[in-house]
Amino acid sequence: MLFEFHVTDAGSARILARARFRGEEPEDDLRWKTWHDIAVNHCHADEVKEAENAEDTRSVAKWPLKAEINPDNTPIDEVANLIREFLQDPPVSLTCFIGHLEATRFDK
Image (cartoon, rainbow, N blue to C red; front, side):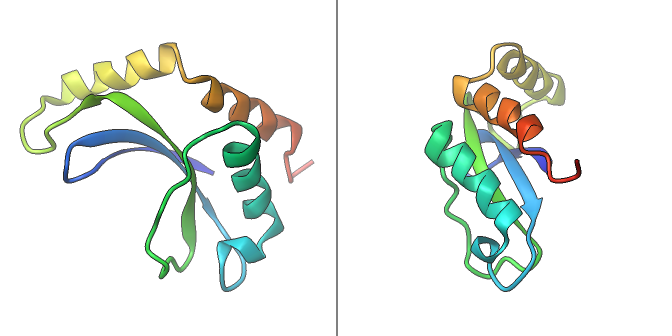
């Protein structure tokens, strides 16, 4: 799983949890579906509405930052500080999800 910082064209910033899935659709992969269900249904993370044509990876869930970022002219050090602030006091849903990731590791 990859956690990525993403800024939309409209300037909303978020952390996405992305994962590779096996099969035609993410919902066909037990591992991906388990992570999604834990994040969205158990930990109350935001669901991601993505294009239906994802081929290899899809976002499991998202956690919005409470800051608007202009992708064209926000200095990189300001963006880095916003990410640090977010991670110093992460949302309960992200903390819950990370705790469950360790409990449901598929490589044990």
